[in-house]
Amino acid sequence: MKNSISIKTKIEAAALLKVAPFRKEIRKTEPHKHNSYFEIIYLREGNGFHTIDHTSFSIKPPTVFFVRKEQVHHWDMTDTPDGFVLLLKKGFLDQSMDSELKSLLSKLSELSCIYLKEIGSIDTLFQLLTTEKDFTVTEGLLKALFAKILISAKPLTNKTSKTDDVITVFRELLNQTNDLRNNVAHYAEKLHRTPQNLNAICRKTLSQSAAEVIAEHIISEAKRQLIYTEGSVSEIAYSLNFNDTSHFVKYFKRHTGLTPQTLRKT
Image 1 (cartoon, rainbow, N blue to C red):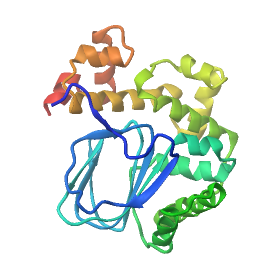
Image 2 (cartoon, rainbow, N blue to C red):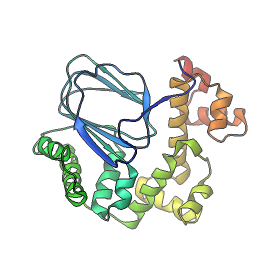
Image 3 (cartoon, rainbow, N blue to C red):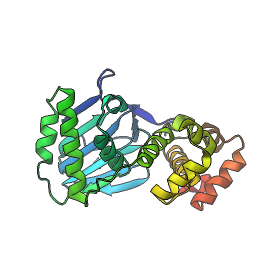
Image 4 (cartoon, one colour):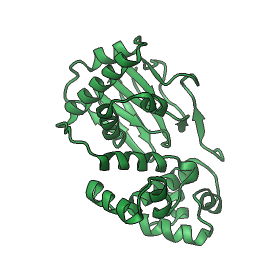
């Protein structure tokens, strides 16, 4: 086991979006992260398992997987896969003025796996995206694709609000796992909100307190490091901005029911 999680880059530095057929030779991969991009994998054929963080999903095509940049994932396939891979950088969204596109992507980024009820035009949209170069057309194709994926899995709600935007940016900040802070005031300041206001938005939108949202991200990153690296508990605590290892151990046990050492042994 390595001391750190490997990071893969499958898109050129200057590119903001890449859509390509899923490589058929891929069967098994080592656990890894992605270099600052969101990945959507659509499989219309294939068997086996896809593990995202510490959860294994059975591959039952047609299905779509979503992997955020901070997540660790790997494949264990027993059959030839067929489908598409979409890599999307934040820079694309920064250039886009389409709020509905961003709202749809926000919904997808909260998911890990969708088993599709029907494919419809999803195949066609992926295929068109592999060759399209115009930014405005690409925006439209992405919005159509994201909507089709969500509609195929469950009823799509079109409601969006300023509070949704706050939550989206809040999650983006928390996804920067190299500087996680167990501090509501820290994130409230970055969002130009008071801690009380951020807490109220989280409770209204997510039915969780801001502290609970932060805790989910801290515990998820702690689990990744415990499972996929050989870093000591003290080193992991320090990387998560805990000045005291014993405090980190108590915090981890309070939220998981296990000590870090126990989780690593299971």
